[in-house]
Length: 182
Image 1: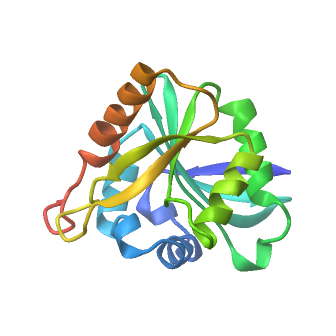
Image 2: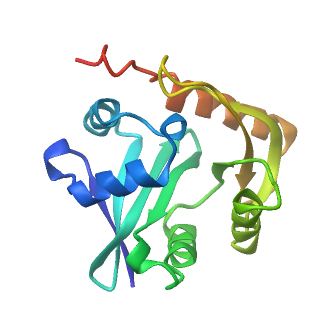
């Protein structure tokens, strides 16, 4: 059984989840701890969740509730918990509990891991809806990254443009330099 435990304070963040976050995503694709903790405690739209599977900590899931849709930012499973279909179970779980459009970013398709990741999301009901997207940098020390956007349902051109604009403004406009966050 899948459960999500939302974390809203730095002192409640298990160190094992922080290590998983830092080890699972390249530096350019994640926030520094200071920025992440600032957002956890100050942005109600951000949900940083511990994934629990059959009572055990299984990984992390980070998403944003935005204007009429959700943006799925990060999903990572602890290595010892892999091969139990926890990611697919989580996507089925959020299908019930996060209604409406759900968007996520993926690396452009190739013959390696990026292609496998896209096929994984396709098997779970998502499709590529935008290929001309550049993820803004998380802070001034990082670089923007060309990515694709996937969604769990078809979107009109206007919806897609509005959702992408909202992601850029709401998720990345909070590009605080780790040094500048008080």
